[in-house]
Image 1 (cartoon, one colour):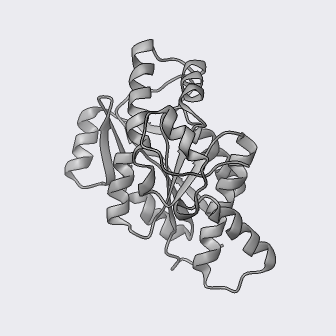
Image 2 (cartoon, rainbow, N blue to C red):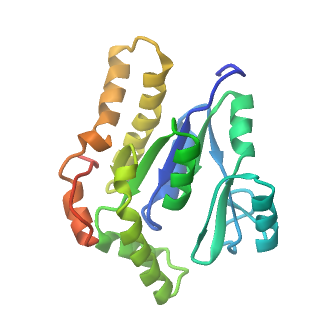
Length: 238
């Protein structure tokens, strides 16, 4: 366990709706020690089996706006007519508990966090292509057709921001994506520890480096093209 004086590493994870981000986050929280999850606040209604205090804190619009006025959020944004926000208290609690903090937030929120916490590690998760994203949205679908189409349009816009992130992870094969995300989280810890790394630790860092923005492969080009986004580069499962 880290000491109480520990300064938390902050991991930002963003992705278009339907990219499998929640599944990846849940798996990482199970398998990586000393990692806390910041549960966002939202004014939207719960979906399916969602429970207050588990996936989100579900509050009224007036309660959310009171929290904005009281400067209780590290970041907040309005998406599809609903507020979403990350409370400052989770960063304080992570520091007190000697743990690192994982934030599951959208592109707007990520930009605010990156401005306030420039040392945060940012990870953008992509679907393998637009067709797969649409299939995933329909499969989970509690949403009517117009909402699905709106989410696809929003995804195209969000993906244009991929180059603002340190790491790009293509969620194609789930087990590979879980392992890659685990390597990114552990690799950042190793790099910032100041310790001499063992051979195994060097391998973890090398695996994580495959997804760094400045080391990305051509994998992203067809993905961006499928969303009619300017072509550049990317990383994903082998």
